Length: 191
Ligand SMILES: [Zn+2]
Image (cartoon, rainbow, N blue to C red):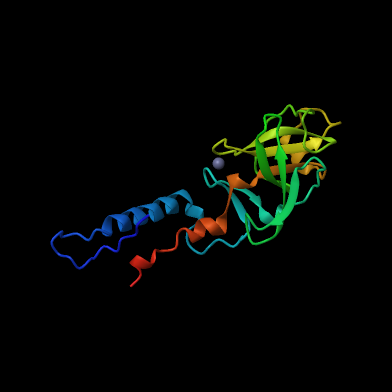
C-alpha cells in the first residue's frame, strides 16, 4: 500500500484526509471494547485466559494446557503462538485431508457433542466428540475420553475425570492479553 503522507495543513479541503481513517480506528476500538467488555480496563488479573476467537467467550486457561503426546501427530513443536508460555502444539490431519494445529488442555469450557466416536481418533485409546464454543457454537476442537467408557457420558463425568482432555485448535483461540492490546489508544489520539 502506498502510504502517501497526506498533508494535513492544506486548508482547501476543510477536512484532513487522514481523519476518516482515525474515525475508523476509533470505531474499531470502541467496537472491540464492547465485544470484549470484560477485557477492557485493568481489572483483568488472569493473564493467561484464552478466548473464543469468534465471540470472545472465555474458553480455557493457558496454565491448564497439558501435553498429551500422540504418535499419530504429523509434527510436534513448542511454541508461544497463543501466549507467552511455551506450549506443545501438535499437527494432525483428518480423513478429509484438513490439517489442524492443536493444544491439549486438562479442561476447557466447551460443549461436547456425545456420543463419542471411536474411529479415526488422533489419540489411540481415546474416543472423541466435537467441541464447540458454548456461546457462539464455533467449532473449537475435540474432547477425548477413554474409548472403553460408554460413548455418552455426562458433562460432570467428563469434567471430574483425570482421564479426559480437550484438544483445541490454536487458530480459533485468542489470548485475552492480545485482545486487550488491541484496545490501546492509537498514538494519534494521545496528546
Ligand atoms: Zn464463541
